[in-house]
Image (tube, rainbow over all chains, first blue to last red; front, side, top):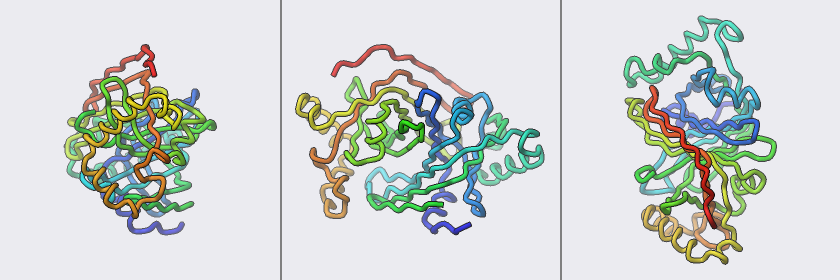
Length: 151
Length: 158
């Protein structure tokens, strides 16, 4: 697995929220802000979710997803920086396609990644499934400069 | 909507492949507008499929209960050169709103014009406006969860 450039890795490590876009059967997009965990070893991204949510229904219909993680500068657009990830999402349901221990250890990874959150934040999300996003393309931008990485 | 400077625009091509991008936007009291280049992927998607989602949110990385967001789903209407010609006053009003809401961005874009790709330069030749006509608006606060969904039935005149 190729190593991503440092500016992309910095975005993954420094930011708190990812924005996930999915599309339903009528080709209507849907966007949700989400906590995320980036796996540098395989460039996968894990997201916490609930089976009843609109994004899960959408992914069951079409697994194509797009995800944005960005830094904003309200004074200078040349400092805006971010990544857009295109890929496919797999729904991971405990005791169906992920072991219960692995599911719980992933939840603990999230608790470590978000240490400044209130203690019960990750628990209160009532996560009952995970989304595993395999990236196929990453676009990085800083101001008006873009670069694309195909994985 | 008034104090959040960036929104996230979700579009999809005819094959249902999603595309998501941050955009600046203005509200004229009736509709939201954003601007894009006429060669941008979002413009190509909207020409194929006018369904869009638009998210505006305020984040608090320390306490998620403070997070606020509005998700608008609806149809996009393109103000291309013909529409701009037919509705010049509306277009001027939108441009004025952008200058008022993003004065620092406008100064930066004008001052560093040479550093911008052609498609990004502020010009009516390569920029277009897109109006969002909402069909549904979802508002939430925190995670446990004040959600209000409003179905929007009224059609907005041109």
